[in-house]
Structure formats: C-alpha cells, structure tokens
Length: 210
Ligand SMILES: [Zn+2]
Image (tube, rainbow, N blue to C red):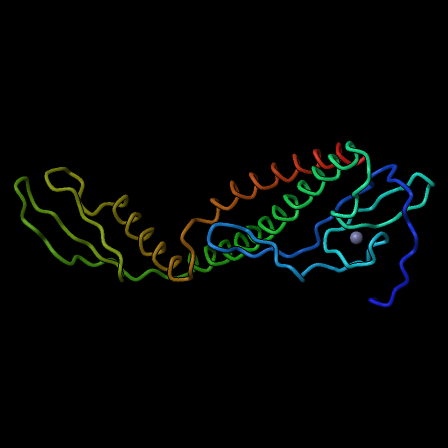
C-alpha cells in the first residue's frame, strides 16, 4: 500500500460523512487505552500516510475521500471544530464498544458458572460445634468449607432458613472458585449503563457529521 499513488484531493471538505476509530483497546489499570497499530490502516487521500482513525468526507467538487483526523488543516473553523468533536466522539464510541464486548463476555461466563454451581450436589450439613454463651448455646454448622451460626436464646435453631443460608454460602464459594466476584445479574446493570452511554455517543456523532 505504501506505493499507492496519492490522488490530488485538495478540494475543500463539504461534508463529514463518518468517523471511525479502528484501534483495539486494552485495559490498563482502571483505564482503557487504544493500542496503536491494531486498527485497519487506510491510506489517506490527502497526505498518503496510513491512518487508524478514518474520516469519510464529501468534497466541494462532489467526490468522496477518506482522510485522517489530522488532515483537515486549512479547512474552515467550523469544519475543523466539527471534525475534532466527531473524532473524540468516535474514540469514545470505540472505547465503549470494547468495554461492552468485555462485559457481555463476562456475563455469559458468569451465568454459565452460576448454572454449573446450581447443579452441584451440596454435601450434607454437619453440626461442628456447640458454644455455650450467656443466653444459651450457639451452634456452628458446616457444609464443606461453608459455616453458619445459630442464634442463641431464640427459638431459631438450625431451621430451614439457616440450612438455606448454609447452602447459599457453599454455592457462593464454588462460584468464587470459578473466578467470579459478582453475581451474574450485576453485569446487567453495567451492560445497561454502557449501552445507554453508547446510544448517547451515537446520537452525538450523528449530529456532528453533516
Ligand atoms: Zn492524512
């Protein structure tokens, strides 16, 4: 592609048709960083170099061209300002899409792990210890590596509610063992939030291209 002949396209930009940031993103600490070199490179009709952020434009003479985000020098202030905003919106969209894909993937795996855990047979509960306390006896019940305590001095012994708490704790441990810290439904909220932000960015981008 390097030997591609650059077409003389110096006509002014009449319309910005679209902007796309093609770079992949990686998570660095709590930030998302674009990785240079991961995008589709496209030779620029203006400078001949290859850019990873693609801007499609219609020129004053009716031709279409693709340029890079920094190749609109000499255009009117309005075109330059719009292009700048559109490029930043396209970058934000690309970042949100990357995050959304990751959350969707995590949600699928979390749901799968949750189902696996629900199908496991929990071991039988055992009474491990009875501790005399001021107001009665506190019992400690175990199920594998999970523990619950009964409430001394109340009528509540190891009843069905305590038994259920023990099973839930045991299943929670099996779920965490599979590498998940949050229940599957917690991903729904994150997904919804990212989808909402993505919709807003799409609208913004739609209003910037003209
Ligand atoms: Zn260029």
